[in-house]
Image (cartoon, rainbow, N blue to C red; front, side, top):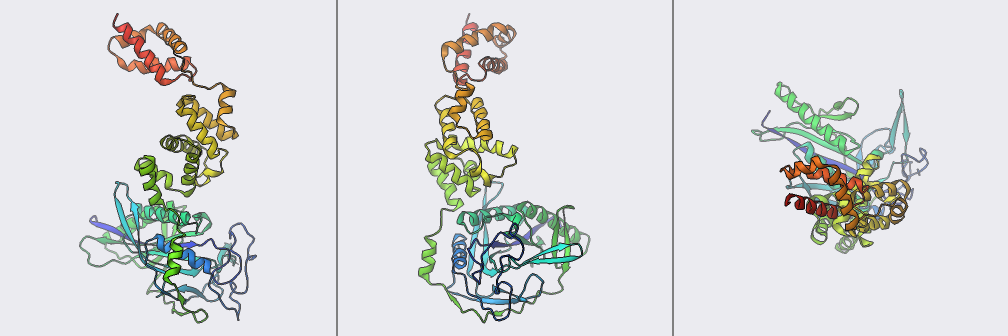
Length: 485
């Protein structure tokens, strides 16, 4: 099976950030922090005699996603009953969409590690209601119905993904789109965004897909990558030893870093879909579609291209800045305060990200640090106008992170202003040359590598506050004068 490739299709389940649930006025709450079973009503509990009503906000959010994914929006939508029995499904069926989904035939372009772009087709995006949540305690299971009935958008790709790396890129791209649209906060740890890959492997001589497995409810993109990579290799090993992969629902054991069988499937699930009798057909007018289209914000790929075209950024820097909505917003806020575009990008991606990583602060939290966009812009300007060199600016940035103080105040309090006076710098250069005759003679003898050491000693004598360009120029001039004697 050395000449084989993975065949992966992804199902992504995204809870929509609506005020109320999919089919009732019951409020949507954080199912992790809010006490169990406090955000429920007769509809979400599936009590007899209740009737669903479609949430218009959820439909519009679904339309936004469909349009952002380049989908067609059929004029007729219909909800259906998907029948199965599980404790967290109070009605014994789920209201979903089957043969008449909200959006169809779309695509996402993903960036690959080699710099190329690949198009992944999106088969459909359909609306449904989420289930409750089972909490297992010893041999017992508890049910929290706060999540039951929350609007859920399921986005199904075609099996166009051929590696764990591509699956990761697709998931990151889709997650960014959902967050930019404001329809999902992207917090996979809380289960508001769940990813389920369907995986098989295919030999180059195969004419049909082989048996696939489905890995359920992955709660991070890192786990999506690891689970997909493991399952691909597991299936290859099964085929190579002459066995056959069995159709199964798999789970991911994070502790053991392996996929595990949850149940085998002898046949396809029979959900007995039929049109939901309590809901009318949903007609999506072309006027409504265009109204929703006008609501779309600037999406990551468009913003990245604008950063390259208007800000003069390279492709890598622009991609890093638009990878998360919070980062892009912070960057643009800094520019709004008059900072240079390229310099700001360098200081965010280099200086600020380094500090955030050291303090285990996620990129999404960039706007909640002690450093405001106005303060960051002031720091960038102090570097650009020569008040601070890179080393001093890094010191100031670290102090801003700890205290939230303005950079100018830190510079004054710590005396960090850059020294550009040629007379003062020249005196320090003379002292360094006089005290390090061995380095001088080595340089004059042709060993130009020691120039860096003399540069470092001069900057040290100036306590790191010397203007590096002035120091370099004067040091070079004085050494050339010695060489010509």
